[in-house]
Image (cartoon, rainbow over all chains, first blue to last red; front, side, top):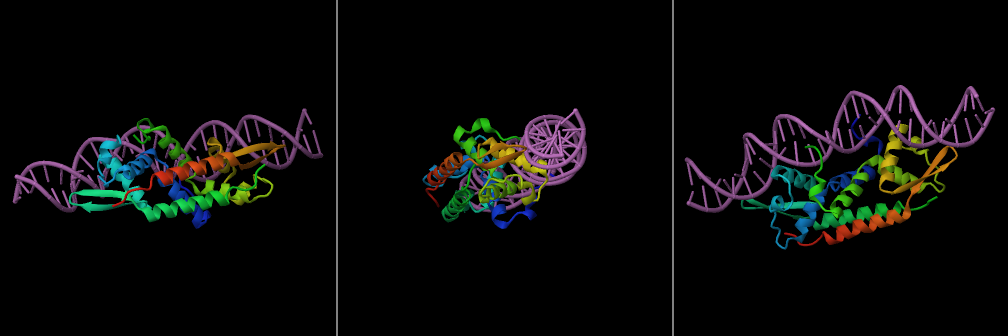
Length: 107
Length: 107
DNA sequence: ATTTATTATCGTAATATTGCAATATATAAA
DNA sequence: TTTATATATTGCAATATTACGATAATAAAT
């Protein structure tokens, strides 16, 4: 127990759940919003901006990268993170399809 | 540690995270999809449909109810669950606003 | 080559989530 | 009232997540 039984669900259900899970933390929401506000991808000011320790931010960035929601470009000793727009749009579309197809018959 | 630091984030960020968290489990996705497919809200056939124990389904339904995504109507000894359409649409709009406002400047 | 700055990884503690058996509650039927 | 059925709650074990200190890795600057 304690582990999600992914085997009994289909690919779409598991993929949606993974996407939602990555987005299910306020720090990651805040990171995405902050990244999108910067003109020039000034990135790990993220640590200064959000009030969490550097390893914690690094871990959150890794999770966001795990579904390609963001990409990081190494620029010298800094890394410039930004939103991966094609994937972002793809996910938005996926979620809208889910919401639209799953709103039917009610009591 | 081990607990999300909600205090350091704003209301919108925390609300979005809560919504995403409720949706971040394939069983709950499957329940929502199944409910929407039934013409007549035949509800706890959910237990038969999804391959999880009755208490587990009951718990997932509770979490879906916690953000008003579904509502349950008692009908005799059965309970008829269905999607709460106004809330469903509201959340879809909220997520779209998030996706649209958070897709800007990239490297 | 050494120092400094930036980011990533490891290890760990605290807490949360998932799932289920056992049990409680509620309602219909007998 | 007893019995049967449907759903909810409780308690618990296994695992996952969140956060951070310590440390490693990388690369620019001296």
